[in-house]
Image (cartoon, rainbow, N blue to C red; front, side, top):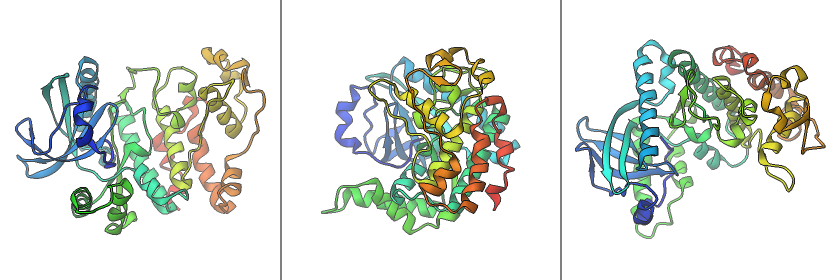
Length: 383
């Protein structure tokens, strides 16, 4: 489920219908049960709507993917994964940090079948929170709490459900708050949209109202959007993860499993703490974005051991010999601890423990990378 970042959906509904979306109208009732009240977000694959569940008298979020065979198949895959998550919930409290899935149904529109999914209503994403805070990052106690809960959710997905999320990033981690706080936020969204003479609605306005009525440390988080997830024993795609959070084995086109999520979680924790990406690769005139990404990884984490590099059959895409990049002739090494102390002015006694927490999550060899359970035992999370 996307975050409550909002979009001017009503103005583009008719045009977007041609692109595969279902033309939702406020006030309509989905499946004879879900009364549409407000748009919560829209993306390339789907739109998300605040609805009143007329059966249970509560608010829910309904995800309406695009129509057509490919999108319907992807949505059905997501439903299967979510049903597995639901079946395992009672066995593990860590499941509290994965979004709750309530229902699914089909609608027919001019673009064919739309397989819709119904979720619990959550708050804004960590991406919205980061944007509202500027470039300095979030308070460190909140970063620790959030990282711990994300890792608990990943441990549940990996061990109990045998699911790889494949797209851990701030947009897919949503705040979990009280019903009262959500009502305040929703009231603000409606007021900003319909208020006479009001300025155009911005996500920052929603977040400002939200933070005014909430204590950040009282909020929890939940992992959302399993739309790209897959089984550990049946990966759906070679190309996974959003670029800045993409693990090295995925960049090199190799097999991946749950350690890829751990790499992304390390990138997430760094971004929450600093307000900036750990890796922000850019394409150049003579090299691709992936080339730059691999180079930045080597700059930060050091030379890839030849013994490991030789195991990567597709490494020739990037290397002319073990650890020597084909299109990047000059690399300037720097350590993670140095970045925190020099660029972000962290005191060394604060930077060193955080570095010690992140580096095992960024091991080159996936089998040596710390699992979620191991990460949760690190003292940085509890100091």
